[in-house]
Amino acid sequence: MSASTATSASVNAPTHNAATRRARRRSATLGVVAWVVGIGFCLPALWMVLTSFHAEADAATNPPSLAAALTLDGYRTFFGGGGGPTPWPPLVNSLAASFFSTVLVLLLALPAAYALSIRRVRKWTDVMFFFLSTKMLPVVAGLLPVYLFAKNTGLLDNIWLLVLLYTSMNLPIAVWMMQSFLADVPVSIIEAAQVDGARLPTVLRRVVAPVAGPGIAATALICFIFSWNELLFARVLTGVVAGTAPVHLTTFVTSQGLFLAQLCAASVVVSLPVLVAGYAAQDKLVQGLSLGAVK
Amino acid sequence: MTVTATRETTSPPVPARKAGGGNRRRAWATRAPLLPALIFLIAVTQLPFVATLVISLFDWNSLKPEKRHFTGLSNYASVFTDEALRESVVTTVVLTASVVIVSVVLGLVLALLLDRAFFGRGFVRTLLITPFLLVPVSAALLWKHALYNPEYGLFNGALTWFGELLGIESVAQPEWTSEMPLIAIEASLVWQWTPFMMLILLAGLQSRPAEIMEAARLDGAGPWQMFRHLTLPHLRRYLELGILLGSVYIVQNFDAVFTITSGGLGTANLPYTVYETFYRAHEYGLASAAGVVVVIGTIIIATFALRVVSSLFREEAGRA
Image 1 (cartoon, chains in turn purple, blue):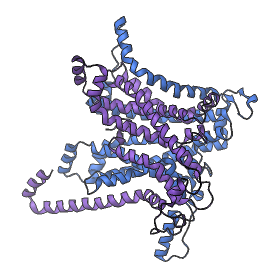
Image 2 (image 1 turned 45 degrees about the vertical axis):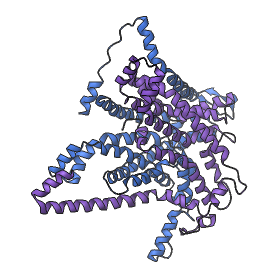
Image 3 (image 1 turned 90 degrees about the horizontal axis):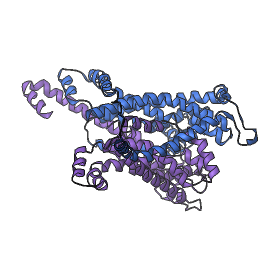
């Protein structure tokens, strides 16, 4: 583009220079606008982080005390420093439910995606759309039967029930994402490796993994995020034993007195894993959220 | 262009020949990796829904289990005649539509802002997607307590600031969540979902054919003309995708309604009402019928969503 402007600039220099200068000024202005909008849009989140480092008394003022002294008290209280309940069991429950469901999703989705991209079954698109249609089924549609089933089998308040449900919740997304990543692996290379006598595990490790690896990692991160965020199932199906971090957050605000700094600290802590995973998977986020339809 | 592309690829598959034993075995070997995932999904998602359908035909209150009996479609009649349930149908539609429309428009503006090189663009993009990456419950709690609280929330705090700045004596201090409960929920959801729309639309903007845009610019098309006649038509399917996927997710929203208003003051949407009906009122039959209504609503949206995804998908497959 710079080359073309250079050549045309020599043709009619004065008007064009003015135009480029105007264009450059406009784009600089828009850059500033983007910065302002970006910070403004993110302001509630930034406010949450700032408040989490304030003392409770400074967090609950009107007008807000921006420059109040910073302290870790909010975090200390959240982690049970003031004799309150410790958040570790819910955090560990969330971690376990998200981690094991993600592993299970990968174990089920990888072979399925293989059969939908590399060695395709007949009518593979129909199968893809069946997977997707289950994702469109609202959670509330099956909530009551799942609850009754859990109650009758003693699985209520059990983290493994959540693992199964989160797996089913994320499986369609994972199949779609991985299908689109595995489809990027050139079939000719796989066939060549097989002709050379490589067995399937070797092919998967040596040929498929390097190409599709980053995509598979992003899929795992997105499944982890969705499981970590889930509230409705966890709220209905768990209690004191298997309660997850989001459930803990909702029951947290019953304490008397000031709690805003503590609450912000809790929100920051619970959101932190998702933020880290989300920033890490940023480039693949769109593809995951649009079920692989947008690359 | 799209239409022809779709038509070409949807030609009926070659009818299967009667396969011999070896072929059949090979076909099953190809299918085998698919089966665990399929069976798992059917067992965990489809079977419960069938159970919901069955339960929805019963008059069943779990506090009076001995009175359980078959009532046919009367639960559905209740869903549509019961004042509260009917209201929650309306609330669901209003909530979903307003959140989706506003966040698509804002997302488009943000995507257009980001669709050019400027200093620190990656960082601004990271800032913009942050709301989407907060755990939904913490985002809802943040809005409810740190922003909306009438005594010390940031919104009323900012109003006080402006008041002091302009020298106004008594500045309005609205009770956000009780004076405008639905708008309060919608605003927090718009904040969370705008980045989602932005990401999809940004991907759409960046897939515009560069040569055509350049040619139009050289032909003297103004920015508005280019937006109206080139960008918008190109974005159409990305807009559709964002709208439909957003609708599918937001129609199911539970977290924000549960956290910000607990479904009070006319903000109970269908998912929340289903939860209330079964978890608090123990009306299993009625809750199931309401659940089925949510599913029917979702299927209507989802059919369109699937069609859009499918057209994008086939185009990608055709390009490969």
